[in-house]
Length: 417
Length: 117
Image 1 (cartoon, each protein chain N blue to C red):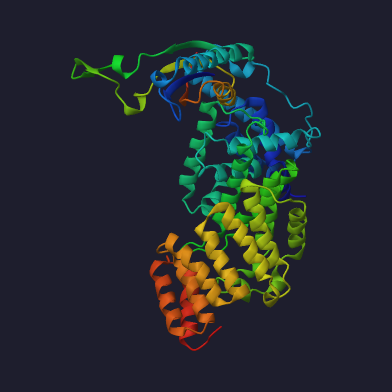
Image 2: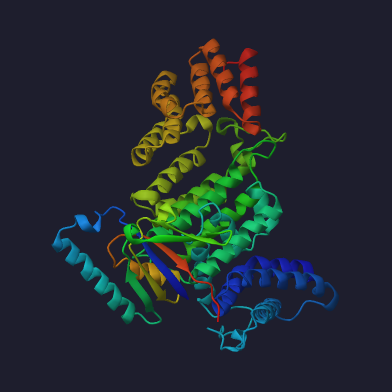
């Protein structure tokens, strides 16, 4: 195999475990990640000329370790320290120097990376970026695109976060989760944020930045598989897999948003839906964030498993949203519940549920949009047009606005559906 | 690593002077337990720790254009509740947080020192 594909393969399957081994050995989150990225850059430059080494991952690890040692030496020289930290015994040299780490070792290390990247000393906003970078090695440019900031801005953010981990003395361990159960919720929230960033419709951008959302789904599945039996992680993986399975049908050829009812269900990923419902089936009703995610996953599963839009079990979805609303008190959940009730029990019932959401979400374009759709289904054309106009007043530019405009034009032209 | 631990506020608790003598004794005991737990934990050592007299006894010294002036009270509002501090040697921040849960639930600022030889 030529250098490029081998390097991609090593990057994809070994990044997390290599970084974990370096972190374990040197304990310097502010240095080792740069060193590993540098080692991959060295490989990209050298392998095409000199050929792929016999043990590609081992080569990367050796070069990365050397880069860390060099960085430590520079640091020591800068501080004119007499004793060289690098001459100390490594904290824990990986016993096995081949391509594959010793059994079990890589598993723990990647989990430690995940808990480090989601440590509460970091602001919640930076945790998703760091988790994608640490555990999966997602390129900084891709992470920047996901969070809609320039690459240099994201690079600076990551650098600051890594420096904070180092200066705060955040340990490279899996915490005692019985004593600190919130740390699991932090992991779940972080991955969820990474995922929703990929789905946020933003002005001028594609509705789904699929490549980046893929990474968040991979991270969710990895977390659930590395820490089995944790409902919050299992529910998160189920939810993300079930939502992401519809990605190919969510946008039309012109990049426009396609409503769930209009989506070509043949383009949904059946194998992923099976995997997501499989995870969901293992979960019992629970509490807190785990239950919140489980109920959301349940809604996604009701949609994913309906053969046609008309066969959607809206009554079950409305009931699930009611439980979700009782749990979270979220007006957004109530908004979704209004849609489901409108489908299950008719537009007037939906409008009644919507009223309470409207009070708590003033000037939210989706409230007006849902009202417009319910009024439209009830045959109140003029009131529906007025509600579309209200939605357009508050909706920022982007795919969703384009969608609302199209729906309004369509109704004004005489369609009632 | 070394951490400066500042006890900066009573949080949800009543101020010390409003506690009954029994409650004060119970809190004092927690400080004793904290000290014992630090001693028992490998790699942890309390290097220093004192209770402070509070804002009524603190003075801010500042120098402007070479002139020294002294002002009554703490400099920053955030330090008004500063009631005491520890300087603790510990392997990492998780160990520090774990041990600090033994203390009464003060609002606490944890500041790592810069590592210089």
